[in-house]
Image: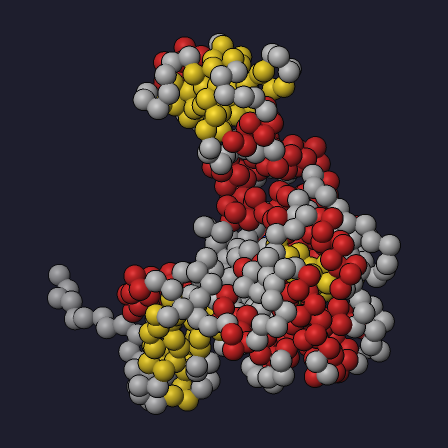
Length: 507
Ligand SMILES: O=P(O)(O)OC[C@H]1O[C@H](OP(=O)(O)O)[C@H](O)[C@@H]1O
Ligand SMILES: Nc1ccnc(=O)[nH]1
């Protein structure tokens, strides 16, 4: 059917058809059509939305991303016909039924994700099927390679290239803000790409954005790294492993991180930046992605194996994930805490020790410290102020204010103190519930939103002592977080009545 183009500024790969035209073409909402510009020979596949009012019959609304491919002007007459569903949908259905992806099937799926051929719902189906039925090591390797090959790669002349990555799952995990500058301060190159929050309330890219822009091209990432030794950027903006960030977009609302997908997501980014040496942080414990340490050891071996298959040397650290890292959750609060440590603060010990331990492993792997001396070497880079100076250089080259101080970074104006209901010891701080409250307060989108924990697990409190404070930039978000917090019970003080079960007359 020939239709006249009307350009629509809508950010997905679709077209809008009048319901009469759609009916005549035998297509419905969610189906696909092939749009062809006979003058240029360009064609593009798109998802269909229909309307009975927004456009007239004989007109096709072409959405912005589709026109990035078609490059047609308003008023152009294009040929539109129904298109077959991509083969990748059959592959996804196969995984739903417990089947294995082949290498070619994996390439089909990743390619269709990158090219926006798969709809949000279809990508969610892929993520969910992989989450439920898992991926074996060959499928993980196929996925890692396909994720790399559908994007750009960095090629450094200097080696070794060092990198680190946390699988996430523990709130407050702001360690990259310390590790990246420590490693760069040692003279090593660390082109650190991070994702935004997946299951948490602030991914490293969300945190770093408080200090400087994080959206750069692959070429800029390489140039900045070669110039100052390291960066902390958002992988999703670089076209490095572009499928990864699209997939993470659909994991976020479900707060899932499919195991095989997670390995490929991490290792694809490391491989794409040309990492030779990689340290992987695997937080383990209740309410993390890896509740069981034995499972953590198995995952570590899988990371190491995928590293070997791709030519990277990987070491893993199982880290304590039962309690948040440091005392803060949420961009401004976390960045303030991390910057304070770079400026010389020696607390919180959980943040300092975890950052120095992982940095130490990287320094030992790279030969910058003797075996067993990495922690001390990292500590000296921190104590001497070299890590702080390097962080200032990273902030500056990424376009931030290198003179920023921890005290300059403040949380949202609305706050609420959650207090101890009685005397006792804090016997539980539920990470998952804390993340829920931080997200409800507005984190990570509202940088000032988040939580500050005053009494971690094991702390003795008196009735009325503040246990944690919720911050928000909008009053209604604070009120929502307070309301939900009353039922979520993220903190348990020994002796608290958790629930009253009333007497019921047994019939
Ligand atoms: O949201 P959850 O699932 O906790 O994990 C996601 C975070 O963990 C990793 O951090 P890094 O890049 O190693 O600093 C990712 O990049 C991301 O920022
Ligand atoms: N799935 C992922 C977990 C953590 N970091 C990532 O980049 N990806």
